Structure formats: structure tokens, C-alpha cells
Length: 342
Ligand SMILES: Nc1ncnc2c1ncn2[C@@H]1O[C@H](COP(=O)(O)OP(=O)(O)OP(=O)(O)O)[C@@H](O)[C@H]1O
Ligand SMILES: [Mg+2]
Image (cartoon, rainbow, N blue to C red; front, side, top):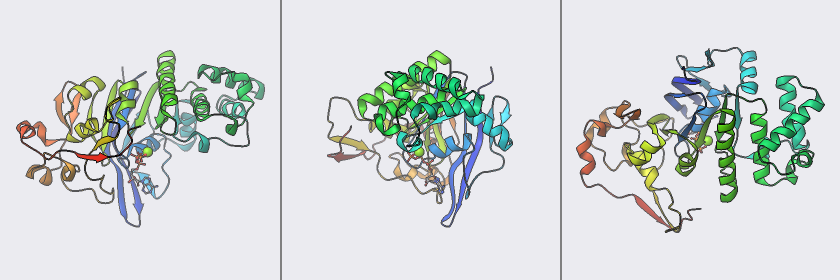
């Protein structure tokens, strides 16, 4: 079966005064029907720009470069007309953003806001749309959905507001939901509830989910396949089990080692030394080399391709051809004291 979404060589550049920011720089991946795929990477790696590109919400000075392809249900979203794209955005692909408060309008009841989506995209009457909104809110586990629907965003907790956004994303039963850091703004218990809810809804409706996060813990709990992004590129892709059992790219290793471990040493956190370079100025060769414990002369000269390193497992690291370098002594990760892991 053809994948639901197939992205090939996606390049999204911003033409800024500081130069051309190559924020997404040749990204390719697929999402199958009913599949949950994660994108993980540090701040600035290009996760959100990838999501916004799929929905064609990139504004000038940004643009999707010619040659990029985003195929969804047999259509190329890069070249699709605006009218058709609006239809897809409401009906077939929806997005859940990080900050529920700013995504909601403070002067309308949450029920009206969920209903509005069905009014616009399904042409339902006010009454019918409101009924459907209440049903959808109930599906998200909103307590007393009928009463809650009449309330305003400020009358709800953060977790309930996130349920409202999930209801807005699901009311049209889209084929794909893109969740961009959907739980970052929530406290830990509510985070777990919202993630459970997304997994449950995905199973119930067979919706595909693209889960975007900087948190490998979220990936482990919700997704079956993971794409690791670094500096505008995919640097590793594998099933979740394979990625945790056999991480190949040193960046992935670093991300895994810097995951906080529940119940021990909450005050110390390993971090990958250095920061993501600026997208106006990606380093030549391997973009991770300045932060890499294994780097040698080849990564400086040559930009690594995505090597096959296992079954359905790829890694953009020259270690694939010189694996013995991994066994040589290398500097440890930086340990930061006093950083709360929660
Ligand atoms: N409108 C814009 N104009 C210029 N540069 C931009 C614009 N939007 C994003 N960028 C740049 O593109 C790069 C990738 O941004 P993006 O928002 O995709 O990162 P991210 O991986 O989602 O990070 P975070 O985890 O912080 O959300 C960043 O360096 C960012 O500054
Ligand atoms: Mg982001």
C-alpha cells in the first residue's frame, strides 16, 4: 500500500538579512496509513518548519524550494492550488500546537470553537455542529462535555484546553494529525494523560500521527518509528525499538544518554556539548562533527549520506564505513549539575 504521506528532498529556506537559513535541507520520509511516526531533535533542528511545510503554512521570507515533493493521498502538496490546500488543511490534515491558550480565542466558548471547524469544513448547521463538538469533546475524555462546551478557555485547566485543541483537530476525522510538542506546556501527569489519549484515538480511528518533540521519552511512549533530525536534516531513522537498542548516530546516542532517568539522579543531567549551529551557516561535511566525540578527518571533508545500518535503519554518519572508530577512547559528555530533570 502506498504511504499516506511521502516527503522527498524537502527544502524550506528563509531568505533573511543574515543570509539564507536552510532550516529544512533535503528531508525525506514516509508516514503509513494509521502509523505514528516521531520526529525528535533539539531546538532549531527544523522540526516545526517541516510540519508547517506539510501544511503549506510557510510565510515569506520563507519558501519551499522547487524540487521538493510532499505527496499526500496522491496529491503533491507543494504545487496544489490554494483552494484545494485549504480543503486538505481542514479536512484531511490537522495540527495540534504546543500552547493551547494562544491557539484558542478567549471570547468564544470552547464548544463554539470546536463546532466552528465542523461548520466551515462540513457545512453543518449551528445546532448540528455544536452537537458534534460535544460528542468530539466527550471522545477526548473531557469531563462533563456538555457543560464544559459552554465555558470559555480561561475557565478550563491547561489539560482541558489541550483536549479542546485535540477535539478541533479530530472533529473532521482527518487522515493525519500533526502534533507539534503537544504536551510541553503541561505538567507531567497531564502530559501522560494527553499522550495516552492520542495513542487511544489513533488506535480507535486509525488516524496517522506525526509526533514532534524534543523528548525521546514522548517518542518511546507514543510512536512506532522515529526520525531524528539535526541541523535541517534527517540523521537517523529506525523503529523505536531498534533506535533505543542500537542507536547508530552519535547525535542519537547523545540524545539517549541525556534522557533523564526516572527515580535516580534528578539533579544531574548529561547534555551533548555545544549547540545546534545556525541554519544560515551549516558546517561543511558532517554538520554534527564539532559536537561529535568520534569525529576524524573524513566528516570534515565529506557530507555523509544516509547509510543503511540495519533493517529499515539509516544513519547519516561515516561510522557506518569505519565502525572501529567507535571503540577508541573519546571525551565524555558534559555533565551539568543542578539541572532539574522534570
Ligand atoms: N520565519 C522564520 N524566519 C527565519 N528563520 C526561521 C523562521 N522560522 C524558523 N526559522 C529558523 O529555522 C530553524 C528551524 O526552526 P524550527 O522552528 O523548525 O525548529 P524546531 O526544531 O521546531 O525547534 P523547537 O524545538 O525550538 O521548536 C531555526 O534556526 C529557526 O530560527
Ligand atoms: Mg518547534
